[in-house]
Each structure stands twice: as C-alpha cells, then as structure tokens.
Image (tube, rainbow, N blue to C red; front, side, top):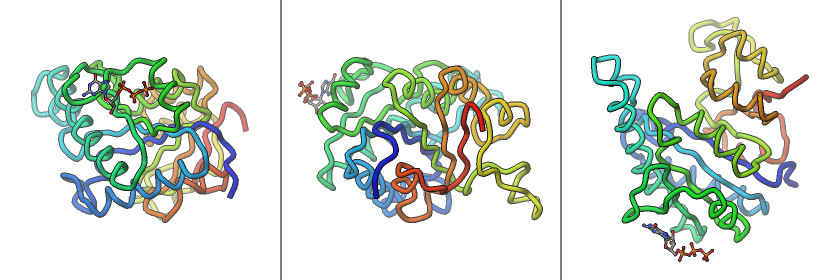
Length: 239
Ligand code: GTP
C-alpha cells in the first residue's frame, strides 16, 4: 500500500473509545484504534489525532439539562484530555512515539499546544494527540480537528465514525438512505448533513481541506483511507 497523503489528521469521537456502551474507555477498542494509528505511521505519514470526550462528558448534554454551556463545554474539554492520556499510553506501549498537546495549559500532565512545536514533533516522526479541543467553549472537537489540520498543514481530515460515510438521511432510520461517494463541502453544508458540524465543515471549505468520513470498525480502514481507497465519503471543494 502506498500513501496518497503525506500528512493526515485523524478525528475520532470519544464514544468510539467507549466500545458498545459508548461510555468509559474500553481497553480492547483503545488498543485496536492504536494499532490502526501505528499502521498509518508505519506508512511514513505524518500523523496527528484529535480525540473527542463524549464517552466521559458531552458539553451539549450538560447544557440541555440546564448547565451553563461554557462550564459544560469545559468539562467536555477535560474529558478529551483523559482520552488523550489513554491513547498516548496505548500508543507508547506499542512502541509508537507520541506527544500529547493540550489547548488548555496543564503542564503537569501534557505539553501546551504550540503550533511550531507540534510541527517539529511531526518532523521527528512523533504522533501528536491534540487534546482539550480548541480551548474554547462553544466549539466542537470536530472544529478543533479542522483548525489544527489547517494549522499544521495536514492534507486531509480522516473522520472515523460508526458509519461508512455520509448519507442523504439517517441510515439507521431510513432503509432507502443513499450514501455519497463524493460530495462538496458546500453541498454537505446546505443539506445539513450531520456527520460534522457546520463550523467544522466551513473551516475545511475555506481552507480547501478534504474530509474522508469512514467506518472505524473496519480493520485497517484508516490506512486504506490514507492510501486513497474509497472507504467512505470524500468531502472535497469540488466534484
Ligand atoms: P525535542 O526537543 O524536539 O526532542 O522535543 P522533546 O519533546 O523530546 O523534548 P522536551 O524536552 O520538550 O520533552 C521531553 C518530554 O517531556 C516529552 O515526553 C514531552 O512530552 C514532555 N514535556 C515537554 N513539555 C512538557 C510540559 O509542558 N508538560 C508536560 N507534562 N510534559 C512535557
């Protein structure tokens, strides 16, 4: 297999780490995900990861039950740091060098996010895990993925989810839902497709950053996406 991209950013939701229940960190799932990341790194590709925190706490849910939205979002950001530490541990146990960088300073636990330092880490072959989202409430970890990808010059965002792409309607509810092989950012936005939020897609659109949406549960799917195989939906500036 030959990589089509030299620099990628993998976005995975916290819920994916929670296994079937979607809660906590399932060691088997975590180890499998780490294997998939190592497979990408082994292709010689610069690899960065943005991880969500929904398996521990979801800001939107907190706000829905009356919490102050900013407080709830800060809890969500801290949850991503917990997941980041777990992923760092899993990767390093497989011999993969990593650096965990947080958008919120917590120097005793991980490095602060400094863009030029992140790029330097990549030059040295380290996998970077970006935690604490953008460091701001009201922004999702999908938006953090778009932002960091643009900042470090990643060529694509690999959005690993539970479904094998973007559909015109919810495939879990509608049997006749049709999957897009390719779609433009603008079309994904105007159709209100829910796989990524509008802020995240807009940022990718403005920076002409493609997104591949694919199923994480298929073995070696991240590496296949890196090699340009049609594993899900490709979101591009034009078709
Ligand atoms: P190079 O100088 O490029 O080799 O980078 P390096 O990351 O190996 O060197 P550095 O001395 O910056 O880091 C050594 C170790 O300390 C790494 O595991 C870093 O992740 C960790 N580290 C660096 N800065 C911080 C920090 O602010 N907080 C925490 N908790 N760890 C840090």
